[in-house]
Image (cartoon, rainbow, N blue to C red; front, top):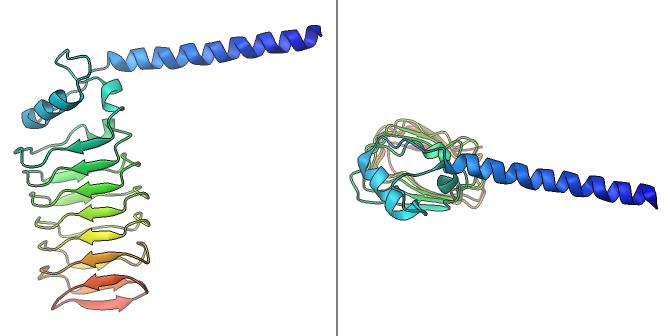
Length: 204
């Protein structure tokens, strides 16, 4: 009986300790304020995610965000995008962005970044990504080897040279037209790919 009581007391102390540690971590993040170098993106984030209306965005507030929808705001940078670790939807289309590094946003399922000035797009480790719209940019390369769940891709009007879709979902639908430098396109059985000359499609 004594041993059972002692075990129960130990378990209670451990649980309380864990709960206190979690609260301490939340408190710490509540006072860890982010620096957003782009004034337009900062303005959007404060309007949408500043829960306590103190005029600053904390790491705790950023980690609560599931959707960022900020099209047509003349944004040139999404930094620090890696702070939004629970992000599932990102729509930053029709802006002035040149680089997006989303590799730390591993919960991301939808990414719409078309009609920007993109020259670099990093989607490494995004295994849940199902929809990617990156058309009307300046991308010369697009590595989708980690995006095994991708089912919709629109990468028209870029400067791609080689594109490998063979590691994406077998149900992928993709539009790769208007890439005048795209010479070779790799795909897998079951995928539905739209492409035009001079592209040559090769099944893997």
